[in-house]
Image (cartoon, rainbow, N blue to C red):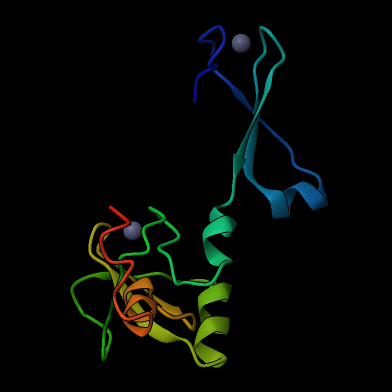
Length: 121
Ligand SMILES: [Zn+2]
Ligand SMILES: [Zn+2]
């Protein structure tokens, strides 16, 4: 990580308890003392549709069972999603699988008589 302002190497700053929930990491520049915060990808975890937490795409596909080749996202969140009835979805861009209980955009689009099909992407 380099400072976007002066290009100096950034130092990682210790996060407070609250900041741990907000940011993945906080860096500060020793030269100009600018702080740069790296947010968690939590924003992709809220909202009406399933989204890939890595690249943010909503263009996911459902898997009937876990794929043994592609990676499975791990962690407490996924365990929780799985426990509350999340279904396995797959991001073809990241080749990542994870559990999500929200509908896919494609499924929602089908519900709405496919009229919004051409509006996105
Ligand atoms: Zn700097
Ligand atoms: Zn992705």
